[in-house]
Length: 346
Image (cartoon, helix red, strand yellow):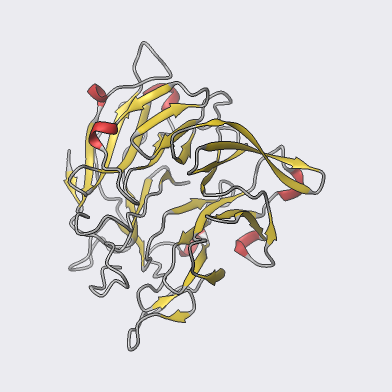
């Protein structure tokens, strides 16, 4: 069933997308924090963000780390699992701990665990390290700065910050099915992370066309999907998994933004793709792996799930898509793109 989320708000939305093999349909999970709030969308899980391009769940604790591209400050907010529902991260009243809009209030807003002044070196939210090949970095939060590469913080995104590999134009950081970490550069490179004595190193695997996201079937040692901004998903060896380019708008911050692999992928073959469509709206689709080719799907399997109106601006699309520890599907949107969010969409 195609649903319209009539809101260009900066939020994390929780979708009760049934996970068991063979189950179909879209719904809003009972107990969502705004389910019974007049005037609010029941899908919203957390709000008050400018452009949450990349965020993640800690695969061990279920805690959430949100990287929000800032106005005054770039920020990383730590949300323990028990305090995520209904969390307000403060935008557009605040950008990090700085006042963004005078006279604005954001009751109960959660300040960032870490922030730094905004510039072209924007924050790229990362992941907590549980890579078995990186014993010296276990439990630390690894994130990126677009111009200056990978950085490490402590658990909970606590400072001090230390430098990691200098990957220019870093666009995503994520694990494969066994938790082994990779990073991508918008300039084209896919890198496997490694430990070199006391240092974190990045070894280039191959080049892709503007890679922006990574996804993998849980527990699968052999498959890693690389999302290319112009509208294609490729396997780790560079072969094509699906070509969505004819459906995807690819101007500025638009494009094929993220992919999530269903927890039951080994039996259902289901994947979900989040992208900017040709009308400028944000679109979530389900696709199913082709029966005859386990490393390929095609558009004949596509089923539209959700549309978020966003055509008033090309930027601030948000973009992350992931299954949470509860088996539900989460996605993020930006505040609609207008500088400073004067409409208060967030």
